[in-house]
Length: 269
Image (cartoon, rainbow, N blue to C red; front, side):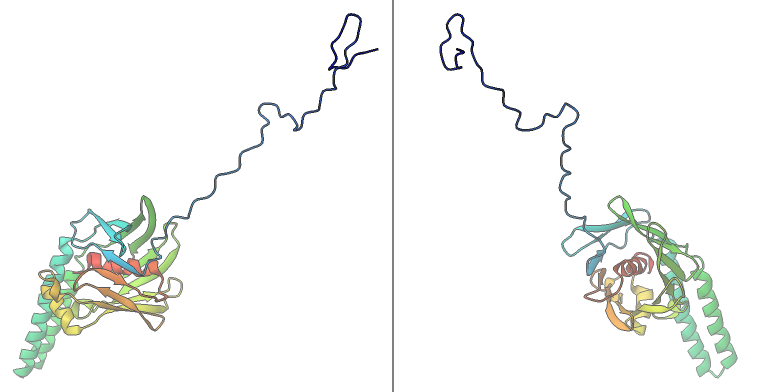
């Protein structure tokens, strides 16, 4: 009679062992292990064009890195300063010429010399336009860290194209040719059909003339610009106390607004 596994065997007896239990999990050879789950995705990177206020750094020499920061001091965008002494001198000379031309025109009218007055006014405008043509064209790339975020390319003397890094146009920014003679006025146009959708205009004509003459010597002579978008107030570009783009809760495309403020605060005298 065979013995069970718990009994002490003696010579001549058989020992019955329990049957081996099957493995509880299937055996996977090396190299066939189940893949690990992918790591959890982190939070998306912050969008630099999601803010309502942008602080600019102006007055930097040509080629230095200018920063655009938020209210919390975080750097949102950077670009290479494109301000040129040529533009500053041209704006100062143009301001002097137009003021002198207007004064001379009024004096000649008072003296009863209308033809000389008209000639003086026309010559002052032509000379101012000639000075404005000496200003080099502007091409700017805004960066989000090390990645391009926006491009601004000057297409003609008065028109700039705002586009995404892959070349998709967002808007056209047109500066009035009469800005040298009074208030600076920018018009925002759709890139497809040139329809006007917004504007930026200095808040005072007299203040604009004073800014052209003395704005580079004292910030107290600077003027603010009022923004409109789709026939509604869209914010303000502050220049008197600090260079700030304030959009509030307007529906204006932040990319277009930042590009416009970059041109105004970075290149305009």
